[in-house]
Length: 340
Image 1: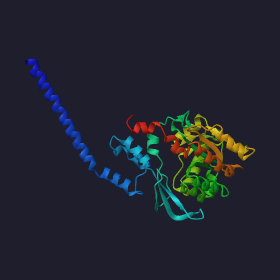
Image 2: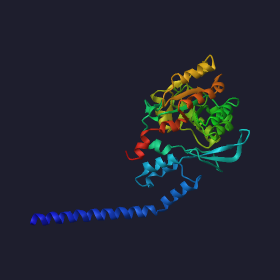
Image 3: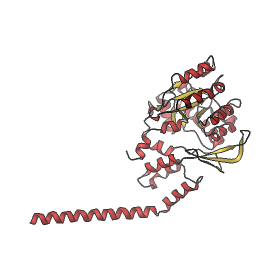
Image 4: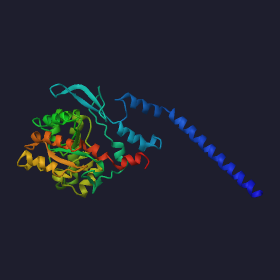
């Protein structure tokens, strides 16, 4: 009898404790849902161009509730990108910007600078499964998706034509540009962003990073960052080493710069290809899910063969995207955000 009373009293104590804990949790949630911080964040999402970018979320993460991971993924899903508007002659229309939302929605917007809000909060918070040996080569978890990349530009005679072909085929790509050329032709860098594409660094002027001292690399990074910021309002966070030359020292410096090394898994060797057919076959004979494809803006057959490659990739069910989109697809960032 006595034991039964003790057990019953114990059950009542546990039940009471659980009710108190539940009440406290409900009170906290009610208070947070009515907080100025959350209301401002939700208002920003609905307001479009006023949304805080991931970089801001990263800076303020100490003030965020424990679901930072989910919020970071939601920002990725609702990424907006302000890009300079192009007129009918495919030139940058000064002062006008297009607002792109991931998923294809877009609206006209005005902004002080062409700043790309990439999925940086999640990327910096969680390691990506596709980063191996300090670089991104591909992302096999992405499924029927490839990232097309163009090195060595921008060029007045080639870049606008490549962008036009990409837009005609509803495709996006990443341009690993030289800082010197971006500085000389900022309008071309703006056109790359305006076309829904992405800019990455290819050094100031094709410098072999492994042949530079740490001080020389730091100077190179700084010059590139300045050129990109002056042209587009944002420094690059993706880096492709010229000649693919990268070692532990370069990787360490890139980490210090908060940059990601991007190499490739499919080399078209278009810079020395004997024909457009050879470039086409170099892609379509071997392409695999999640490939990062290396091409060059100034290669002889790039403009000629690009429409055919894009058509063939789409025929085989591939989506042609930027490197940033590829490295997130199927990655453990989403799993972490979903609490897995």
